[in-house]
Amino acid sequence: MPEQNSSCSREWDSSAYHRLSGPQVSWGKKVLSRLKLRGDEVLLDAGCGTGRLTAELLQYLPDGFVVGVDLSQNMLATARNYLGSEYGARVHFVAADLQDLPFEHTFDGVFSTAAFHWVPDHLRLFRNLFRVLRSGGWLRAQCGGGPNLARLRQRMDALMISSKYAPFFEGFRSPWVYNDAETAADLLRQAGFVEVETSVEPALTLQPNSAAYSEFVGTVILRRHLEEIPDPVMRAEFIAELTRQAALDDPSYSLDYWRLNLSGNVPE
Image 1 (spheres, rainbow, N blue to C red):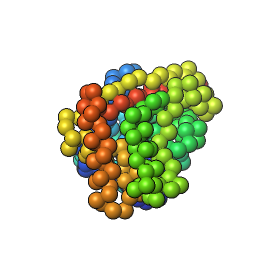
Image 2 (image 1 turned 180 degrees about the vertical axis):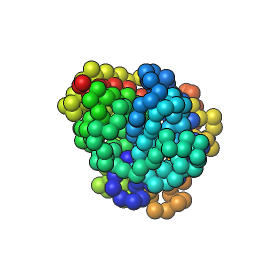
Image 3 (image 1 turned 90 degrees about the vertical axis):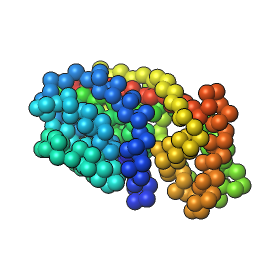
């Protein structure tokens, strides 16, 4: 998932993410189901991660081609292994920042889920995506937006300024951008897109127990934050405190996800 420039912050535990990303895949399948495809398009999967949705996308494109882009080499290695040789020359993976893509007027469409909120500059992102699309091309995407994970973020922020953890987070900048629908629509139009549609919808997600919650939050959500804490014991205590608080929620171990839907077209 594209984000900041240091090598540590761009890499993921991709095998764990592949195993844990069921919620992200389920949301992505809903976005895929809304695509109107002929089956021969050339598409960009922007922030392809471990390729679980890339494989789903290829099912809709028996005569098409997909380029999967991600900043994480670990994610791309897992994606290549996951897809294997099943799709042959119909899929290709490229390591690149979504803010600086090495393509121009190449794709019929851009598909993306669970990636854009990791990109720090959304106007630059959307301008890059506009540039890679052909005349009449389209963007259909979903990412975190609006009040996404507000409850978890409030608790996390309180921990970060506590005396125990504050020294590690001095000058730390959030790795996420959670725009509301109106802001996202304005940025898409500034980038050149027309027929823009945006919306935010709730996607409450439940984890079955404390162990599952801890692993999911630590791997999928707070990876960048945990990198700031050098002591593994203190990292575990950071997640344990958030898990303790989540146990008291109703329902327990729930994550208040909100998804921002994005749609726009390139003029003919």
